[in-house]
Length: 199
Image 1: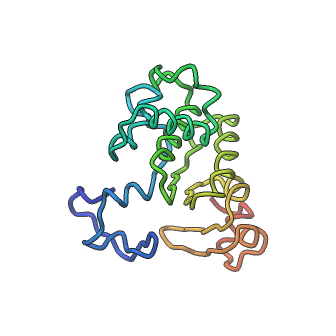
Image 2: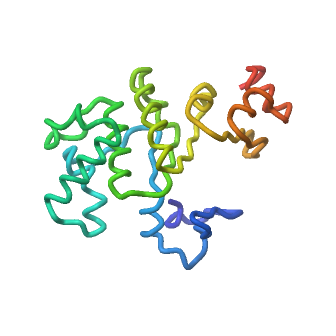
């Protein structure tokens, strides 16, 4: 996402399917199809519910109306939103509730069938009921997709993740199976954090 921002410095390596995404040979359009992003605040496009979900497939050359309808329904269904919006497909996406908008953004990602979903605190702007729905959705999606979730909510991390990394001041302090990291952390800083001694 930083390729057009001047003076950005990047160190290290990030590989998707064995390929370093920072290599000059990487096709950014193909990469953006492989990796989808959900932000803290829902960011639906200023268009209809249907057009939000159909946007990605259209960009990638899918134009057949019947095929797009199938993609939209499948994606909304996968995002546990179809039953709530099936009669509102032509309504503005902005008319949905915050939790529905966030699930719409997830459906928009699923429509292009990425390999990896990046989620940056996807529940931070949501109420508890919407948060529960997003967490339930993540539990289902992780069966099919690799999900990288950033959260400050330790309880959420313990509920939805298989593996957890604890970062402190930009340093990866500890990484391991979620249950082990929360119950038997190896690093004192991790132990202090999960026990609420700081943070």
